[in-house]
Length: 172
Image (cartoon, rainbow, N blue to C red; front, side, top):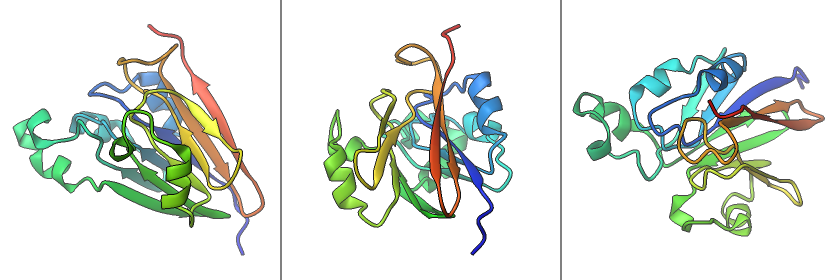
């Protein structure tokens, strides 16, 4: 099997504004995964991975919250999605269906087939690798509730190893 490593830029909770430093970081990746609360098509238009963009709907990604001209885009966003990578499966959902502070055990139960579960919603960065699947939240990629600055994660995935880098920028 091909052991060529790939990179995945992981972000969430842009709320209508994508920090340019986050954009520059994730646009260097093979794939980009946005875990919801996108808030407008401009955020999606700025994301240009080498291979594929995956984005899911957050609790604020509703037609009533988006511009009327973007209703087709927001209604096309799935509630969850997955990406097959070298060495395993990445699953993404926003996480709001599980309440304000979702349980990582619930994510693990619901997505037992995955190697990595990505969620957003809380705006709190976390990398939980205590058991598989790993559960991660990249924090907020915009201006809203960034908890120390806009952030994202970069997953380096190969058949033999997965590694996650945390990227945090100072608030402007």
